[in-house]
Amino acid sequence: QVQVAESGGGLAQAGGSLRLSCTTSGLSFEDACLGWFRQAPGKEREGVAVIQNPRGSTYYANSVRGRFTISRDNAKNTAYLQMNNLKPEDTAMYYCVAGIRLCSLYYEDRYQAWGQGSQVIVSS
Image (cartoon, rainbow, N blue to C red; front, side):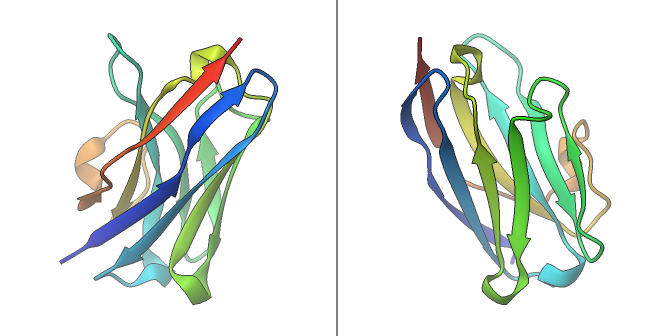
């Protein structure tokens, strides 16, 4: 059974930084797709960033490209989302996802496991 455990998030001021972590189990990390989706109040859930193993190819939503960086540590089965230059519109619940299929920022059914969510609040 694929499982993920996420941590991080919290409160930041505009222009600040936060980091999310996501540790997986139950799948071959070296071949997995990992990433984050987010959902703001009153809005649809959207893909934020994903990383495709084994090559480590990364894909970002246009709204975060250049500010967010997704990375992974294979030895720890963990992915990270470094969020810099945060904006109030980044405020949302962030969900770590893991799957064994090709990454997608759009198709949620690609992912076998979803985290419990990490709240990110950015004040102006």
